[in-house]
Length: 237
Image (cartoon, rainbow, N blue to C red; front, side, top):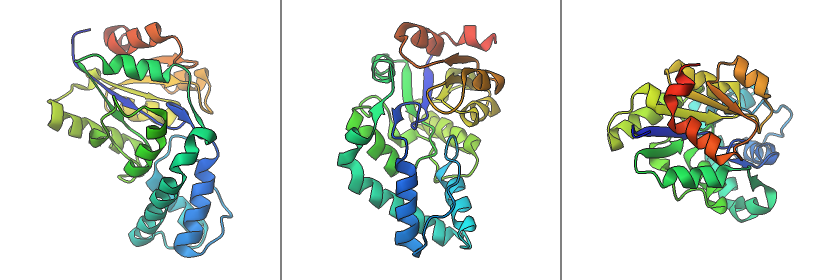
């Protein structure tokens, strides 16, 4: 267990449940940025903000230029910031998350960051009200503004973490998320994929995607910790 470990967390329906807020924020962003009314809602789970925004703009007759994408991003950040104080009423931390993040944060050989479809600023807004930022380094995360491909977010996080802390071999990187997209992005880089069925995907679908380990939720702190830290056992999968 002494080897250094990089743990990369998804946010939505992995760390916190803020279900429904994405539709509200995108509807407002589309209206504020381009004066358009929401008539098509892209699928959100496991996808990046760049992928979602491109689909959203195209479906509403916009050209989905980089300028338009950035307009939506700017609005999303402003709307999220305005709603920051409402988030504790609108959502909750998922079972076991606080305990796991805190326990990992107490280990000198573990670094925690994010691989999330969210924008960096929105990630901070979503996690801060729930006390989850103390042990998570936002500076070295992979975020949804970067690419439509989630695997690019993993490579960005690995690169930034390596520059700050020294390199991490792929089998020392653990990606935790609730969708097959999270699993696939981890496997693309030879990282350990842990699926948690607190979102819209079942244990079976996460297993079938190739997750090395799956959990219904993260409430069994000891078992989750041993899975994250004892990577040899899950790599034997």
